[in-house]
Image (cartoon, rainbow, N blue to C red):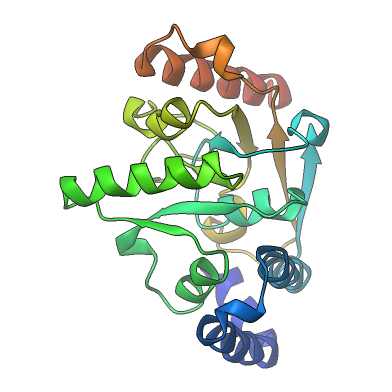
Amino acid sequence: MLRLCYIIIVSLPFILAYLIKAAYIKHHDDRYTEADRYRIARRAVSIMQHNGFIHTDIYGKENLPGEGGYVMYANHQGKYDALGIISGHEKPCTVLIDDKRSHQIITSQFVDLLKGTRLDKTNMKAQLQTILNIVNEVKNGRRYIIFPEGGYDHNRNEVHEFLPGAFKCAIKSKSPIIPVALIDSYKPFELNSLKPVKTQVHFLEPLFYDDYKEMTSKEIADLIREKITNTIKEACPG
């Protein structure tokens, strides 16, 4: 929390301008393309990284499909996870986020800027509709970040079980699945320090629909988790 508080203090002029800009965009949606919104979002991430002494090494960008929609499934470590992925993902993408976590100031505006999707975990009917909406968006070329662990609680570099239902978005849209391994992504906002930190984002080889169409959602979840876990073990052998 120390680093987050420090970032807010030193970035206050930018944050105020960002909040005003985000509100303006929300009320003038037709004036801004998805690329415009994403460029503003990445600029915000870049300033946060600079002011918070955070460096993220990006690996495997060549594994990202050049065209069409896809779903990135990543392990979950903390508040920085999606920001780290976005910092290394050049084409516009968005995020699926727990509705309860999405309404904090700055976070809410960021989700709106990306036209992200909020998931109400208390309402099964709403969850099903949310999945169908994402399926249609991915079919139409959007790229999503989803965290199939369903949350984080001091996970650090340990990968918990993946929820098979999270993979319905990719299965039903018949889209590529991109495993994303996050390493040390908890450090920026979990460690009570202002010392420079380094995180890693690994975009792994995609799984195309023909690769997984005969598999169950549980088998897909286990396979993606295994790929991410093995990448973390190779990068952090100790």
